[in-house]
Length: 392
Image (cartoon, rainbow, N blue to C red; front, side, top):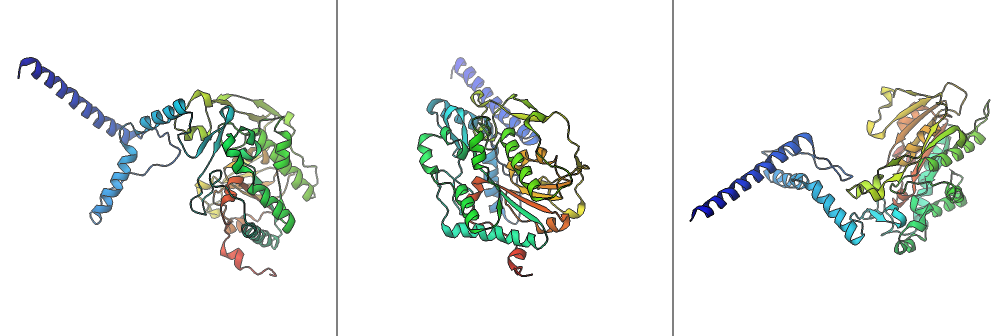
């Protein structure tokens, strides 16, 4: 071997060692400080060796390593960007690229208990509608025995209010809405109070943009319209010493800052400026008189539920509990202006928290559920509600 070959091999060897060392060093830093996670999900936690089950350790470690290998997020981001730029296709099955840079959520509906629509959309059967009616009436009857008013609020999805921005091949799957089916069924066969925003949103969608273009949730305008309907309805149901009315839109400063894309844009695992948008922010001109109250220890609810208690010293609507999914988060600041005491709980499982209700002793219970969660086949209740005789 001549001298140039030996020098070249030496250089290649040094470069190879430097690369290996750099990868090793990057892994150490990454595992110590945590990788910037671009995916909208939780990655597997680090596994530890268990002498009693070495086979399980090897399998778990392989799964863990596959989610934490060198530059994983960078590679995912690059692949997603290429698929989007070259083929104009969504790189994530849960996100649909709509018209005019609109993004829509699309979940697969594999097991019956998982929410889903679009690719697996199908209307309710009459039996499924009856299951929902019975479950909701169980809640209502249990509450009525305790003199608690029950209000059920299904929230329309963005795709139902703005179908014109869906891809043309998707629209045919959305001809039958489970939201309209359930509302019509309850109005025909039940005395449950259902607050329906469908016509309200269709009427005002030309006046205001009601949903974020790159997020699955309504914006502050959409939440504001819903809040007005809720307060107006409840004020008509309860005799108050003073007039309770929603704040006028003129009572808010309207800001429209340009912000990065919402939760659907983040699911794409890259932040393309195409999905930056002006976000609507409604800020009260005069700060509200309500205040946050510490969560009592005896309430015993997880912080995952984002519990919040608000009290207002001025005359207001009676003590209330509201169970809601993420769509209810935008309602909290608006509704807080009108209740003497209100407890908010965010729960995607839509459980009926009997112990919380018994502890809080509200006069009003509000259930808020987003439309896509209607694709759960069954709304479950605690056995305590099911076993309670109707005549007790």
